[in-house]
Image (cartoon, rainbow, N blue to C red; front, side, top):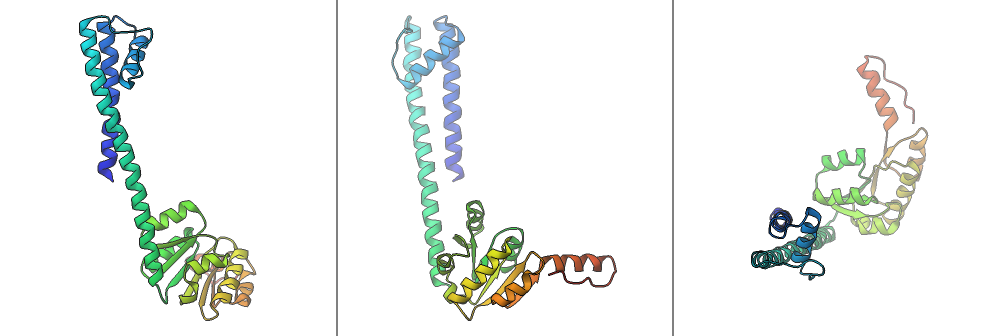
Length: 245
């Protein structure tokens, strides 16, 4: 992939140099100003044809022949490098997603992680890439999931089809690390409906969310405000703080 990118970069640089050389050459051979010389060079390299400006001396004609041949070769090289890069990227994406689907198809007793934000990212790193399926509806985050070699599903975890695509019926547990508590509750209900025996671990973000999540079917709830306040109070050598969720 890096080689293809370098080839593309070199082709652009070479064409730029040809345009510079052509412009300088025509200012000397034809006595043109810089604008006319640049125009003449672009017309020559692109093989569009001549209109109001033509080579007027034998030297200028030989220079033009050389410029046309060089320009055509470099343009062909640029197009080839560009097409090759695009095709390679497409093939890599196809192979990557095919490999992900194959890994997902073989998964049993795996962990589903919903949400790849600040908390979800740390959880994913702790779990590792094996036996884990990460769900996120944000395309940029999903692409990051794939780049880090996780098995990923692009979609909304509140949608039953998304959870089914992640293999919810064969999963042993689901970790819900969403920024929205209502979405987390809905994900719990959907997960329980699709797999009543699945273990559910949830992050709560607001006061009062823990009880709702447990009633919805969560086995374990971590209240971030409670954990944060408790740890800060411990750091200050004070008594353990009251839970706020």
